[in-house]
Image (cartoon, rainbow, N blue to C red):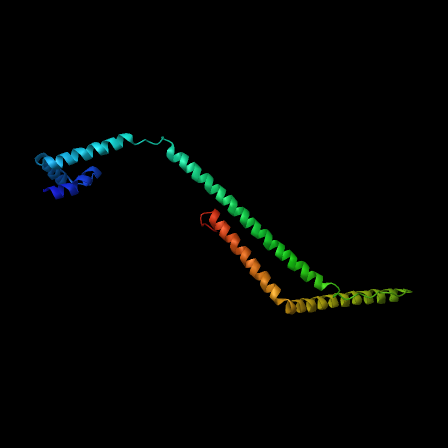
Length: 190
């Protein structure tokens, strides 16, 4: 082994990266070369003094660090949960506002129901009145259903963009909820 190879082997020796053959050749070279031996002894004393000055961490150092990391993670999750709750609140407020807007437009569209009147003089008049009242109630129910369906179709036709926006808000809320569940359960959704 020559001095150049010995210099290359010196740091590998201190790192413990030399195999047995290389280590034996290196030690043999140090015995025969005073210059390399002096360099080795100098490096050995420097590294030895550095190792003596290294302060060992306490035994529970890793546990303390992990506790702090866990506390920081809990705080991050709390902030994230507060933000998600805020977004849900905004989404709910938008839905309530849009619903109130739609309901206010529907006022006054329900038909008024007429009075059922008349005098009852006999059993046949009583039965006629009962069947007439039933028919009137049936007609009123049919008219209410018909008017309701007409109003629904008019509202859908007039406010289809609102329904599209409501659907988009609902999809966004659902996406945020799924993201929150995935984040808090380590990706396990089921």
